[in-house]
Length: 341
Image (tube, rainbow, N blue to C red; front, side, top):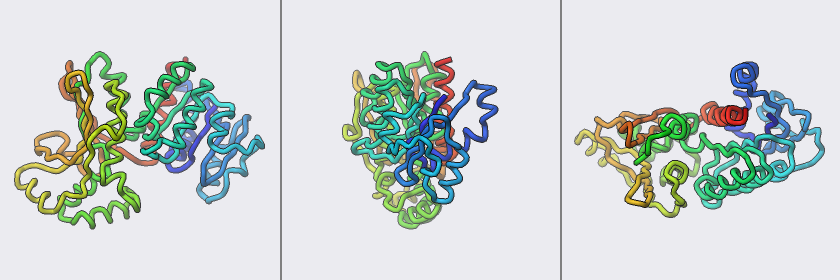
């Protein structure tokens, strides 16, 4: 399988490391034999070689902060969109930054690949939250796979769980902790830190960005519930269609009062059916300590899935991380191999 990386930051490098470490086993057990023909990154530069790029060499250059252009043998000078449009590839691995307001530039990369029948694996929430139906239809029209396990819970396979393991059951509601940063902040506040100190600690550990709005205002979780609504429930929602409230108004007094009542604050993303309509929302909620979601602490994510046949099934796991999100992309690649073999 000829692979092209669009975005070679933390997630792209995480996938690259997994591909290299498991090369023989992936071929032997799953039939995944791969060659990287292109890498494009806005910071690290681009390289194209239809005969195959030295992936270990690309990782070494990235670690030293040197340009990937040193590995270029194609002489095309393509940027990311040019690579998506023209590179010899069977699968495009899109792991660029998320823009939840426009979905760009990732949507253009994905669209360009699907239009020529190239499979796409992405971890980018923007295109899924804003353009899922269009991109899914484009993939079907051109006989390509379009997979995105890493968009909701990183390497924790909530989409695969619903699609494969819960096949035959109707999903009535999904609700959970979809943002590890806010869950970490709320955990530390319960331990006695102020909101400001808990946020500073999250930033120190790399959980929160210097400008943390996407996390603490609930936008990241909103993108994820929108994806769940559209992919699992068949809705046609956009992020702006659903109410969203973050955790910035929760005080130490609120946390203490909840604790005294045997409850705990969690930022909950929820999707549910209301008659013929599908609804979604993100807001802080008081969760009884007896509920599974109440026990999910730190930067961990969890989703409770209510079904008609099995009742409630809860999946818990890491919602971020280099290896974890890279693993989500790897599982999607293996799904392509399985479906196309």
